[in-house]
Image (cartoon, rainbow, N blue to C red; front, side):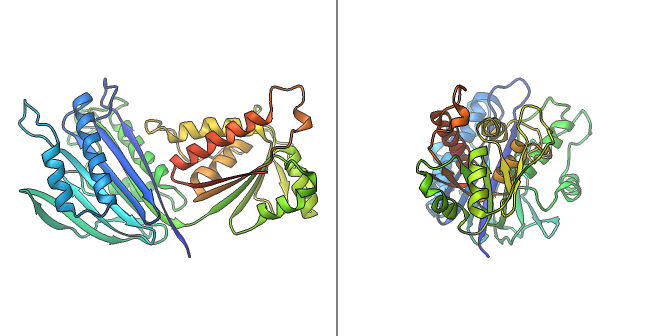
Length: 386
């Protein structure tokens, strides 16, 4: 069983501040993932600079397997000193994990990370390291399929102080909320957003501190093949569909002409739904052996809009899609379920688009923008043109 490590995060800015005092950096390579959440001292511009420097320095060094003692020493010597308080540091949480779920967590002054395994939250064992007179905690861990690890800034445990709660949202209450709210199908980004949204509610939509939650999740790989448009050479239809149907995972067809080609080559009927969950999005279709069949450019254009919203680290709307229109169904598969996406983009001119402001260039630009956004979500993306 091949495993995949996904990640996601959401932030709240201190009320009245344009910049967040927290920052998240990540690095993905063939060996795994490095993710750093840093919380700069104070809020606003100064905190943003501190957290950005901290996260970038640590992410670069840890991803290159440099010992934490050396990373911390470099960090302490690099950060500017605050004249008012005489200190120059940013708190941090660092996750370094390989593709099999084995990893190490380093924490300095951030709230203790929460591990979610087998449907419930738990603590990781911690070892105290003394690095240049500063206490850094190390946890070695092994995550299995469906397990998650959440790191956060102290804005989470300050949520509600003097408003909804006397002493803020303490760790036991956060754990209780996660135990009640997290569902097995939720992605890392969905869970991070869930917790950050609850903090925003306790702040009454006016956060008194920068608040960030980042999560990683280990799960089975889910490759997705997506066919958009017919190939230039009609004689290649069978070969094109054959390549599209190869391999494990889900198969999606976008476009009326593409759907007809796939149905003909597979020898299966193409059926069309008459339901319009969204009046602006054409209805979906059904082909036996295909997981989802949708209209083309209009649906993909809405999908691109949804991807921009999904990627926004400050957007608190739910990251799972419950609507049944083609764009929402497509978004749920590509954003929440897929580990890798392979596009099959046919470049033949669609006669149905003649006289409309739709051409092959527009379709290719949408696919390119979608590819970029999917990569930003941590997906492995391949685009094949024919």
